[in-house]
Image (cartoon, rainbow, N blue to C red; front, side, top):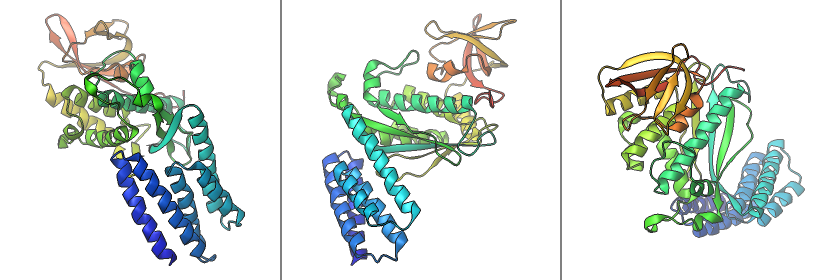
Length: 378
């Protein structure tokens, strides 16, 4: 009997996941609540000696009430289970962790926000990464790159023109709510969670477009990472129909990919209701994206050199490489240069590829070298 109830709950959960994926939040929440009730009925019928099964079902019931937007029911269920005398530490830890998250969710609601189930877990792996720790320069840079990638997803879905310089507009900052979790043990891992903001239903967009929901953003976010990591498949066009944004996302994912020295892999998984496979980025990913971009805009007479990026002014279209002598290179409309990608490279050694237009050196490409993910422990 308990198995039948659990299977019914799983079927309803699957239907709820699909409803959430298509943006039908009310239907999803209703079904999550129904599944939670079935799981509790199943829990009452599972023998006490089946500790692992009872633990999985108990934690699942609390989680389902949270997904249903019923924090009080989740709290009551959690304390009821804890009050029955939990036998295994991992069950108690799992339920107490959910109670902590419910507190965070309640606090977010007091601020007019909702923590959505759309969570992306990023992990860094390589020689410079310790158990849950990493070089501060490397870690902060990767977090910054991940944040900028997510913001660009919001800009694209809001129908805004591609921004090459400057910060994102206020509209997007209001639209794109993201939180960052504390690092977790193991390889260096952190989680990015999307927020639902009441402002999202009020943001005025041109041409009767609606502000993208967290569901829209979550689906596009993970699909773009995966498609951009395999540029030769051209699958990016399935999710991004504007060529300028296609190139921008390729550049952004290339910047997140590791250098293969301090960090060997950057992985991302998650996305929300529907389980998504892990996408792994390596230095080979960066190389394949670079080669793909070169093929998009072939030029002749390319010159390559390395030095420190000393200054840039993309509003006026130039960067300065080196000091003695300094080399001024220019950006034109053919240059695939984004401030989000190039800005963090100031005062770092870079490899620059240029070609000549008259007397000017025009930037063809720029990338970090010699530990391009940052200084090891400085």
